[in-house]
Amino acid sequence: MCGITGIVEKKDQTQLVKSMCDAIRHRGPNGQSVYRHTNFTIGHVRLAVIDLKTGDQPIYNEDKTLSVTFNGEIYNFIELREELKKKGHRFSTQTDTEVILHLFEEEGTASFSRLNGYFVFALLDHQHNQLYLVRDQFGIKPLHYYQGIDFFSYGSEIKAILEDKRVERKLNYDALHQQLNLRYNQLDETLFKGIFRLNPGHFIKVSADRKTEINRYYQLNYHIDHTTSLDAHCEQIRFLLKDAVKRQMISDVPLGLYLSGGIDSGSLVALASSLSNQTIKTFTLGFNEDTDEFSEAKLVAERYQTDHHEFTVQVNPLDNMEQVIWHAEEPKINLLQGFEMSRFLKNHVTVALSGMGGDELFAGYDIYRFIHGFRYALNYTPAFLHKFLGKPAAKLLVWFNQNLGSMTLDEYQRGFEMLCSSPDIIRFYLILRNVWDHNPQMSARIYHKRQESIHHNMIRNSFDQLINSEVKDPVEQILFTEFQSKMVNDYLLTEDRMSMANSIEQRVPFLDKNLVEYAFTIPSYYKLQNGITKSILRTAMSEYLPKRNLEKKKWGFTFNPYEQFRKDLKVKAEALLSKETIERDEIFNYNYIRRILDHPANPRMRWHYNYLWLLIGFQIWKKQFNVTL
Image (cartoon, rainbow, N blue to C red; front, side, top):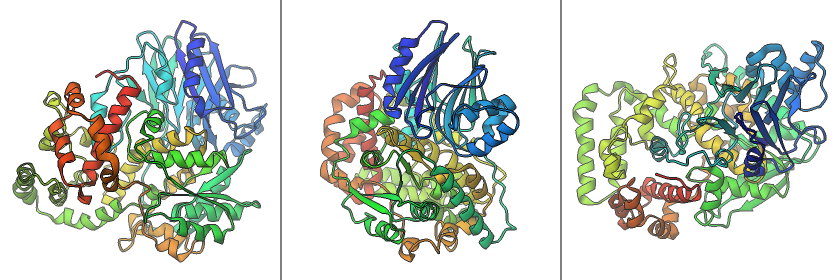
């Protein structure tokens, strides 16, 4: 794992790029390099994992007409290298990075889709003076870019780009609206106006005169196979997952696995143990709460005789918000868990395998169960019910909420809107995910009157772009959509930032290219059988995991916002969300914040407390990054 950054500009910006590298040094503490070719100044920081002696970058091809700086891992590099050797290519290192150059020599940009791994890289064609910035197929690794008047810059993290004082630190109001609704930023937006992130499966071609061209090189297809039996699907899942684990255990530094009490991480531990002749290191995190999974994790650890470590988070998440937001570069909820776990791992390993992706591939979240159960109601609810009853009833609930002062009615309003969203599955999904930008009354509660120009249905429009119209099953639609949205822009971003903050390389075997492509051929009725989430994975791994783990209810890896509000979230909000601060910014409606703070604490107000958490995070982020409104 590493970090990349650079500038395309006529002026020599070597010193600036060195500063940009320093800003992301936590991503690569083992080495740093900056080199310049014509108008391209390219930087790299290295976390040494494979080929520790000869893996410094940039890496060149034989005649030095191509060079590359790379962040990530290519898991099929051994097969690709052997294929290329037969065609006459000569390799000078044992790294996966060098394969990228020789494959590009053979196939050009078509080579990018053949890479199985997670990565961003900057490939420089010295002969044609063109730079290719490439992001992996599923968005596991991030890449940001900025187009200035006379320069183009990029970086694994935004803070590298911000080292250039010419980059304005202005708030992107559209991105803030997305953050408040989704708790992440959709599409290529960031909270910094003018700074974008490259979408998964895309590359940017940048010429020496800073002209850019963005192209898609990979498109995930969704073709359901109704002919293969359940047993055959289970066998193929085991084969592909085991192959992914085998590939991702390649490392020249200590490696371990996250282990919760669930199926995903337990499956990885089981398969890793069968592949290794050494004792596997496993790590479990808890919060001193009833939902801790120490006992279930220990069952798996004992079964496979791992070197098991347990860690209980003792710190208050509000006390460390400044540190984790600095690394996340946006205000997010539930950052501390990943940060503390990575900090604990740092004393034991450099590489960690995570179960991320299992829920997204095999329908592991309760949201899929709701969609599975409600789809019949959605199909058969008469259209007139939504038109003549749904909207008036929702407005009536808003009136009661505003005039009776009980904010707990919000949940009833949301539930009624979901039932009346027939036959629109995306509307149903967005309401289920607490999205409110379709509701002008809610926007009026959230925002200062200055923000009346906020574009309603912005979120819906962005999701319409992700929908595959050929997919008719609601569960399959949402699986496909969430894989391209929430997983990339929320979960994967958080995992990357919090692990790299502690110089830990985190690998995700469930997001192996071969496994992902196969998983999206499996019908939803195998993934959700009798309302049981992740049914097919439970069946596939039934001989590998204890019955208690297979039948265990899934718990969120999160702090309880209600308990946090009762403890000190309210105090923190009173300090950072004062009337003076809120009214000076002219973004949020202070009266609504005040209503939440004055309302008796209630466990049904989870959304309201998470909203306060986001606003606190926004104030910290704005101050840390010196953002102008």
